Amino acid sequence: MHEQNQAATVRVFIALAPPDDAKEELARALRPAYDAYPRMRWNRIEDWHITLAFLGELPTQGVSLLQPPLAELAAGRHPLHLALRGSGHFDRRVLWSGIGGDVEGLRLLADDVRALVKEHGVTFMDRPLNPHLTLARSRRDDASSAVEAAAGLSAFTGRTWQAERLHLVGSNYGRGPGPIRYRDIEAWPFRG
Image (tube, rainbow, N blue to C red; front, side):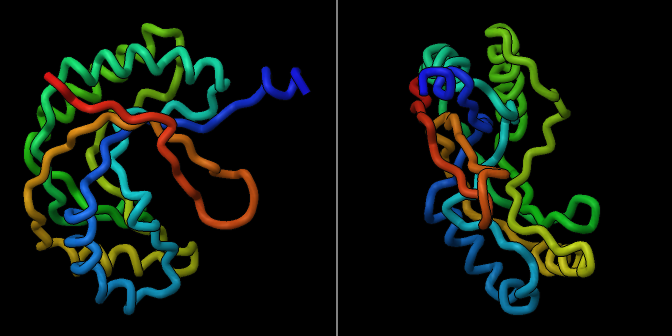
């Protein structure tokens, strides 16, 4: 049993989460798409997030070591003013909402988060930041759904909101049947 605990890993990422009212505003705008494209795999509204750094599978001990420095980083930052705006798709299959507002501040935060993670010995695929919120995935045999849904949502402009917390999130991706589920491992307020 002790060996199992040592080898335990969790799939993690660091993210921001829009407040519930901003997510509900977008969900209302998505209602026609929910009805028009029932075969798409829609992400649960409670799981919507803006990924700053996807770290992949990490040992639980390594996750614990990241928590104090992430808390310190958040404590020194001001909340960001962001908005959900427009829409698009990746590879004709992944539907997303764009991010507006202080996108430069978002990029700087992501850079600092990624540098901190690397300083603490965590290696991960450091892809360029493309700020978005993933909404759904179309099935391979129905790729036009994401493209059409994105066109229908392209004019969406949500209200401005404050990103007030930095989230360290774990997922159950690949751990059994059913959709991906996310949970906060911990979240820290921006206090700067």
